[in-house]
Image 1: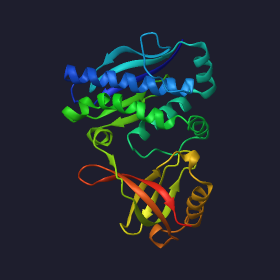
Image 2: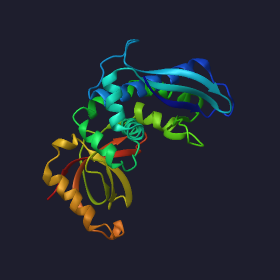
Image 3: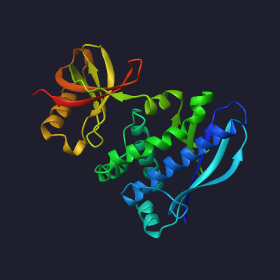
Length: 275
């Protein structure tokens, strides 16, 4: 069996939390980590999980300070263990964190070369995985929603003086999962591309009309985005590498927006580029 040691920390300022919502947060954490892990290793999204699943989480001892619970992600199946060894623990956890952040519309950091390869391998099922994570992510946020506590998911590893943070969830990320909606209307903008990840399709652009830099993705899977659109995005990024965005070369795009009820846009989805 392979075990990855993790913990979940609820920043409650005391070493106790409400039991009901704390248990729902722990259950949500278990489901999110297990579903994402099994998808990465099996290269398919599990429809449901049972006590017989070969990828599971197990509670360990607690620790004092903010309320914390140690747990391990345990891989029992020999073939899955082999794939995990091939991927490597660090890349595996990087990819797992990426998909959770993507489900929450959180801007993701640049991926390592190894993580890019795995994300690309999973591109055909990435949308299904993100959808599968949404319900357990609601449970995972329960203690944040009702008590306004931040939640950290961390990796515990021998040699690390301090556990490495993988995810940080709070009341705002909860709203991203429960309140965000995608508009039906499309809107045109003149933009300068300031960041673009060709594997994931995510990036950031400067919007001339709003004089602001915002996050973007594509309304369709990156693999079905036309070469011409991707080429236009990449070329604009290249042209503006050393230029302040407001003084850059603009391209016109068509977008839909994902926003919260009060109007805050958390991500733009590109539906077309005028070439």
